[in-house]
Amino acid sequence: ANYAVTISDGTATAANINAIDADTLGTVTATSVTSLSGTVSEVKTAVTSSGLSLSGSETITVTGSGSAADLNTINGSTSELVTATSVTTITSSAVSDMLTLISNRGTSGDKINLATNYAVTLSDGTLSAANVKLVNADNGTGTINIASATSISGTISDVLEIVNNTNSTFTTAANYAVTISDGTATAANIKLINADNGTGAIDISSVNAINGTISDVLEIVNNTGSVFTTAANYAVTI
Image 1: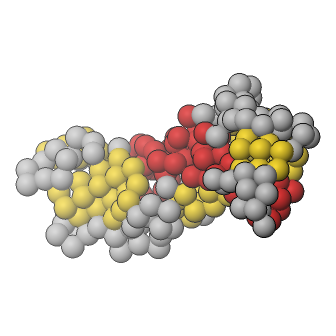
Image 2: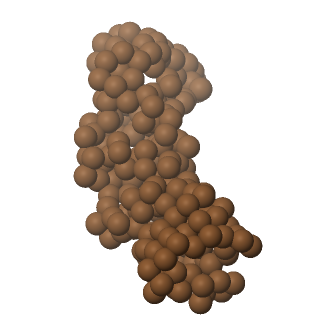
């Protein structure tokens, strides 16, 4: 069928608009719709359809689950508020998309209102602990699955936020490599990371000063070359 449609309703569901759009090759004009609702998938289909014309200034309410990329697409399609407080699971998402989503969080205007607590799965194979920490600061008591990340880099403090919350907040890969950026570190903290990252390597070649007990320092010394990459020259305080 090839017919044009103009929708006069002020409130509409994405499912209904999509059904009309799917039935015709003609343009569906829905610029009178000031309030649009539906699942993340349904709303994304509506706002990205080439045959559907929305005002671009409608408020949107989304339910269900979806990726950060999809939520960003929806948020970018309107100058008004997107309410996503019912979305408590954000599916496989790049951390860059999550950080964009978080930066646009808000409760009025051209923002997206996210749930206070939501679970998220990050799809990146390589992550900075600092970026993971930003997600952790935003998602309340929700869990964060970073099991796809086989390489994590950052300061000891940021990496320890992951290590100290593994299994309660974070799901990590069984084995992941870590690169530490600090110039100074305690052997005890390095030992905590080593206990968590399975058979993954730990690069501490930026660390030029290590302090700790003999036992903790020896865990590094006895595994240099196999587990640890150390600086060629580093000071030790026992």
